[in-house]
Structure formats: structure tokens, C-alpha cells
Amino acid sequence: MCLGIPGRILDVRDEGGMAMGHVDFGGVRRDVCLAYVADEVQPGDYVVVHVGFAISKVNEEEARRTFELLREMSQLDELEWMKEVAERSLEGSRDREPEGSSPRSLDPSVNRP
Image (cartoon, rainbow, N blue to C red; front, side, top):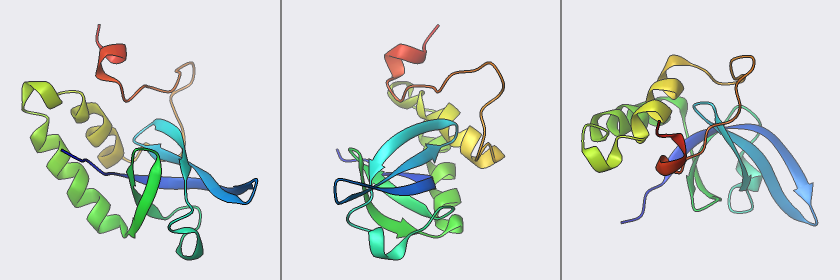
């Protein structure tokens, strides 16, 4: 199964001729390759990311619908880790993390108590 997750672009930069950017997934921030969407995105836009590559631009409403769906899917035990990412994205923790916190990993085994 392939899963693309929406995230909000925080910045766009050139790294050796490749469009890259930091993307926020509800408080989880990752470097993402923006090469496929470079001509159509800017900071503040939402993109769908799959394995580190932004594959399409989406509007904020579509991103919110996807986060809602991910929250519903998190009811399945094996997808429980998605709940926090979806809820934090829906709550609007867009640009900052709580003071003293560190970025969370998307790897569910890292975040479990």
C-alpha cells in the first residue's frame, strides 16, 4: 500500500540544483524534495508527500479532509500512530513546536511509550 501524507511547506530552497524544502506534518518536520511541484508551490502551500517526494499540490481544504480521514483510520490498531499527526495538523500546530519539545518521528516504534 502506498500512502501520501499532506504537509505544509515551511520553506523552499535550492540544493545543488534540486528544489527542496522543510515540510510540516502536524509538528513533524521533514526535508522533502519539491522537484515535481517546484513551479507551482511556495511556503504556506500544502503538498502530498510520498517517500520524501512532494508529488502534488493540494489546497488547505483537501489537506484537512485527508487529515480527518487519517484520524478515522487511526482507529485501526496498526495505524494508531497516525492519530497524533492528523490531530496536530487539524489543531493548527503549523509553524511551531511547543517549547522544549523535539520533532517527532513518523516511525511509530520511536514514539511509543
